[in-house]
Structure formats: structure tokens, C-alpha cells
Image (cartoon, rainbow, N blue to C red; front, side, top):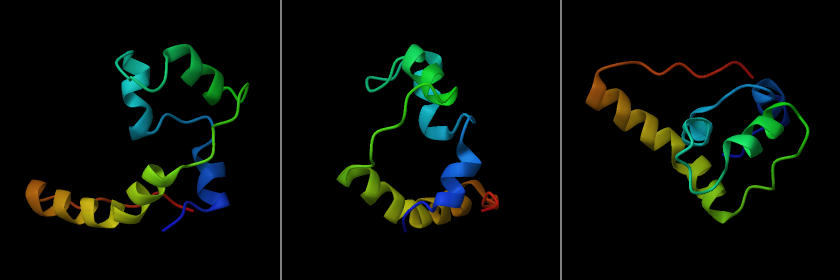
Amino acid sequence: MAITKAQLEFKKGKLGASQCAAALGVSPFQTRANLFNELKGLITRPEIGPKGRIGNSIEPIIIQEYEIQEMVKVEPTPD
């Protein structure tokens, strides 16, 4: 499942789970400065590659397993 334009617009300027490592300064893929510039809209995020598309595709399965293991319900963000 691809991320929709509405979802991308909703996420704009917000810190997402995939950006937490960069915010903490432990990401091998993104620096804090790069993350800041991205969140402020000073730079654009690169296109999602094959690994990102695979991650988006299997996200529902990961959420389902997390809900089972942690006995919680994950609520989707509004589109």
C-alpha cells in the first residue's frame, strides 16, 4: 500500500516513527540537521526506493503482529 498524497501532507512538519533515530542522533541514514531541514520544509525528502515500498507493503502485517504481542490496538492516523 503506497502512502497517499493526503497522508504525506498530514505528516508534513511532524516527527514520525521512522525519524526517531535521526532525532536521537543515532541514525546511520540521516543526521539531526538533515531531519530538521526536512521537517522545516527547507529540503525535500528523496523518493521512496524499493526497501521503503516493501516496508509500506508489509506494514499492516507488522501492526497486526504488534497488536497481538502487546495486546493493544493501533489506531491509524486520519487521511
